Image 1: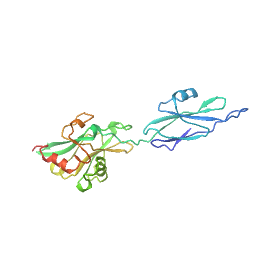
Image 2 (image 1 turned 90 degrees about the vertical axis):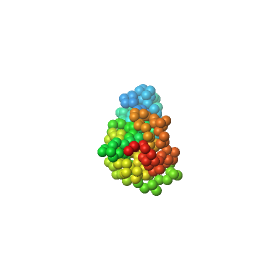
Image 3 (image 1 turned 180 degrees about the horizontal axis):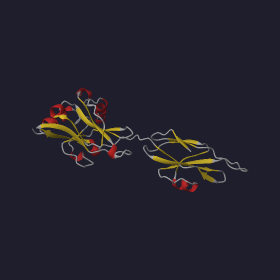
Length: 256
């Protein structure tokens, strides 16, 4: 078999024609099976028992659709003549492309924190590390993204639109870093100049997600769901644009 044209949800499977022996020379029918478990389709009986039928045809090529992205599939073909005699080809495998972005931890919430150096507060964002359907958590990459220009976002934009704008118009130009969960983005005087500061996470396939659930004024710790104690959860861009963010910084969140 040949496996080609692999996408996040499709694999093209093709194979050489089988020939029925004389004197019958009957028409050969092919049943294409697939499964996510290895070595389950090695003979006709195992294929019929363990495989999911993708096609039952007389042709020798078929494009299997509706597959899950980032998943390894095993394929085999059972060739059967009109008398019911059957053989299998050699089992093949293909991994569909990963098209699913990471899932930010703690519902996408970030914790605004400060550390003091010689009395000067350095403002940081902390977050719970993301998870991904393919990429190991330890190899996910993160970076701060942010914009200075408040006119780039408005009260009519949804959370996702604000996050997309910040990602597209990012003014920080930070490098991606592996397996981090905190990042300093400046002194208090520098921090209040930002309209929005967020966190982006990327998997090894290049899929990106953005932490855009809002800011929390309580440490995130190891929680997996922060919504119940995170008053900064956004409705539209509320909690993401400058008024809320600057208000947090200017009303005693970081004491002198």
